[in-house]
Length: 98
Image 1 (cartoon, one colour):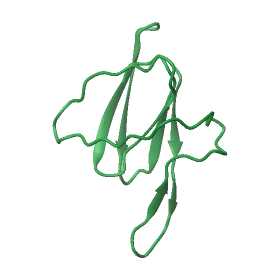
Image 2 (spheres, rainbow, N blue to C red; image 1 turned 90 degrees about the vertical axis):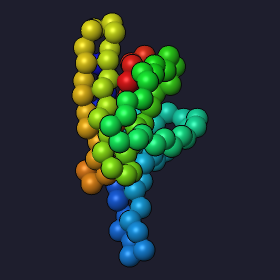
Image 3 (cartoon, helix red, strand yellow; image 1 turned 90 degrees about the horizontal axis):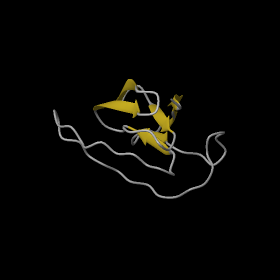
Image 4 (cartoon, helix red, strand yellow; image 1 turned 180 degrees about the horizontal axis):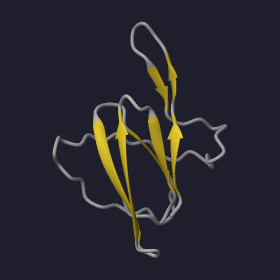
C-alpha cells in the first residue's frame, strides 16, 4: 500500500495562518491537475472512491477527519486521522480505495 503521511508547512500570520498544501518542488509532485474542497458533516460518512490514474493529496484544514484507505489487491486497510491542528496531509497513490 503506497500511502504517505506528510507534514504541512505553516506560515504564521497575525491575520490568520496559511497552510501550504502542495508545492511543485515536492518529490512526490508530478503535475497539477485539479483542486477540490469538500465538507463532511459531523458523524457522517462519505462514499468510497477509487481513482484509477490519479495520485491524491488529502488535507484537512478545519476539524478532524478519519480516512480509511483500502488496497483491494493486498486486502489491507489503513486508518489515518487528520486534524486541523496536526498539519499533515495524506499522499494516496492511484488504485487505492479511500
